[in-house]
Image (cartoon, rainbow, N blue to C red; front, side, top):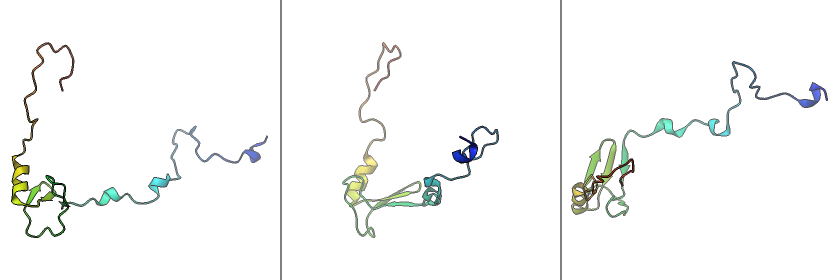
Length: 102
């Protein structure tokens, strides 16, 4: 079989300065992650999970670049009063011999 019958190699990894020239299918269009919004608006109440259709007049909370809307002031207060850490203290493991607590 001579070399004319074998065709040609698309990728020749034997060269030291190998550069892939044909893009993968996922790379044929521009990434949408380049244009992520600077401000994220969440119209789903994080406490009840219900969608708020008209956010005007509803209480909200701004946390960094996220604005969260709430159904009522009571759900906003419940969210604010929720403890950040674990709700109860974990029992200490005095005989810890490399075992993880959790």
